[in-house]
Length: 108
Length: 118
Image 1 (cartoon, helix red, strand yellow):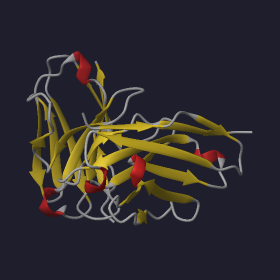
Image 2: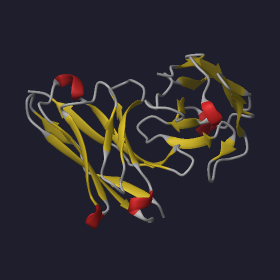
Image 3: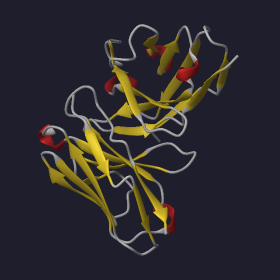
Image 4: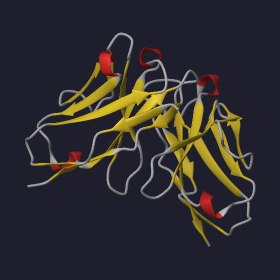
């Protein structure tokens, strides 16, 4: 099984700052089959990034994904008030399609 | 638009069964698999498995075998999750999510809270 480790667990930032979230896999994720989701309190997860770097439909360009192999990054270039949420990575290269433990981005 | 609408919250006693439905609209149902994901209170996302909406073949992750059953009714574009012999630790929000051509999950249903308590 591929285990995903997200860091940090919590990121305290101010609006307008840059957020950098990490997702590390226990083994290589083939074809960069890595997605990022955003979940706000009481809401459904929303797909942000798929294929490690492709933005899903309607996702603002301040969100970007990068990485390959075992190291992946989600970057939010300038945090907007609505971006404070929990972010999860998920690999869909091999079953089970595990999620990482999540990174909470909170207002500093 | 593409949408998944799930059934409402359930309160069940330990040992009972529950069925959660997930109705798809806005696309050809048989063309995309459906994933099921569990989120326990205050916890992260846990992938339970998926069902092939073309063949009806389910795949379960270890830990979700035996008491958990995925099924579907293509005539109403609906997928079901049945949980039997409910335990307190089954208390969670259960999400269905469409598997896209890329393999990622989008969109997600609104979630169904299942509470197991006597």
